[in-house]
Image (cartoon, rainbow, N blue to C red; front, side):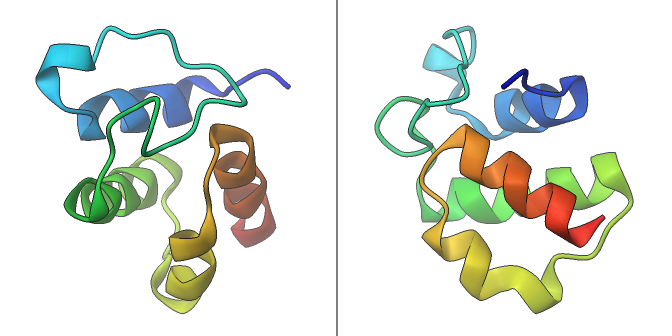
Length: 80
């Protein structure tokens, strides 16, 4: 699965600065591989809303269960 540019940008903006240049793959774990914690996940949701012009308010529970980049991309497409 190819990761969309909008999602890559949103992820990079949400990752801690010391690892923001790490390779992001579809199976990358948001927490373990990309260092996105609970605060980072909230930042990521705002970045995704801005990048895709969508509202994730009704999908917070689903967002909290997402573990990988591919799962996140699937969630985004279900909202679009």
